[in-house]
Image (cartoon, rainbow, N blue to C red; front, side, top):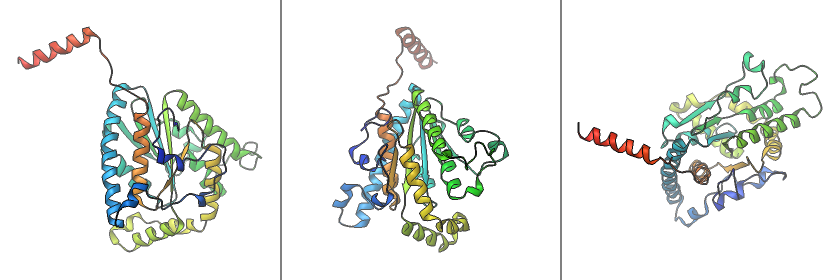
Length: 304
């Protein structure tokens, strides 16, 4: 299975949203754990196995990022989507903890402001795309413009009636715009990796209760997390439609089992590392004249 060139590890394939195929999220196991972990004698042993694997992946990712930055041939765009408490922030923090901060930028997009609404819906995302040699992470993304506003149409920007959401085919048009946008990025050297952190409603409830049971976690809680649960089925329907419409051969969606945080983080780390190493990048080559220059510079420094 190819994702923008790299070979993705076999076990990741089962969680790719196949292009042009119907998606039913109930068929994707939110509690799946990498099969090797099942050999563990206890849940704690399985968790330790996954922690060790994640540590290895972080080291591999740091090495891959170094070559990515040195070659400057490709940029990496990582898109993270998921329901509240699905672990987007934690995934970024744990997976990317070993990379060079100078080579990685994270953007969390808030509610669009007046300037954003004065432009097309992709405008504010285009401004912060990663350059070649860089990793860019979108914590939520332009996909919010086909998810939240479908569930809450009252939050839609005030578009002219002739092109607004009441026009037949409006959402299909946005899906086409996103697909064309991502195809343009891929053609111009950006690898697009998209992860939907697939958490169950029961696990979300458990995490919300946990936040409300520890004072040091109160800051993470927003009452909207509770009110949005009332729209769970609508969100699942919107996600299924979005995944069906925008998972492509050049930029497929990974539907990540996210009920176990360490599994989700390991999954994402392995997918990103596979994508970068699969590009078969190498450090820049230098001419004999440049190498002689470096040798002279080294000699000069040693003789100081």
